[in-house]
Length: 407
Image (cartoon, rainbow, N blue to C red; front, top):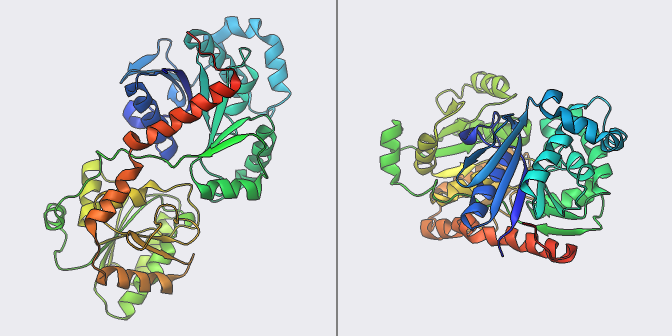
């Protein structure tokens, strides 16, 4: 059963999006993989500049609504005055942009006539999709994270929780990207009365694969005889980079020789640099703010261990990226359990505990890992194997909604 599926979210730079992030990559990968399966797919991206004529890439119709102004949809403003007033009573009064966005959504609804609408983000993207939906098209919303917002935007945390609680009262269908996010939702928002599913974020397994370790190190001009620990992630306190640096300090004090490569940028970059200088870790730690994908592939393969002791993650695909290259991962208990379910693939350590992390790193460097088993496990997260989970959810929602398809 082929469907007409509308995705509402953001898109990555590779297709014109002006911001990076896991959500944007997920929306694009989901859209293009659904299109490959024969579905008609359309995306409304709020980080893509508005164009009068949508683009079509890999069979996906793409609309941008960034920098959208009233002049672009002037006729619809007059036609939908009552809907605007209804939405105005619901949204924050300072966010007039949602009114404009809602009418643009309506324009796309009328043109594309979707069977189902998939909204990525319950705070700002759901209200305009809900209130402009005259045709009663079924909507499913993906919750990409809860506590991650508290760490990333602490000044908006209270607003985010309040907004989510308000919106959830109107949502009938939810997808959680992990059981961890589902449990956080229950903790901060409460029990959900509608239908819900957990679908782990899939990954494009063609982008990450094993390369000979020595070959990778030679290409990167890295030493062949020194253990290498890799960290990939934004430099924010949530990612646990200072827990890792604390462990490195312990190795320095024991005169254990290893090299740590940190790939990432963020608000804690200067603090990380200061810590490294203060504790004289310059010879042990290298920071790279960004690298190309081809370089990242080499760094994964050059590493002996991937380490990211995060305090909170929705579902961190970087662990899986490392494992696709045959590299075991170390994450945090209660956070990375779903990515690292067994010591066949890596270790879990207590949150914020540098001593425990140092012990795990030592054990990880000594252990003889089954590289083939690690890779085989990571490949279970491929889009090829997981895309049917999304299709099944859509079909279940449509069946519950009445079963009819448009177009």
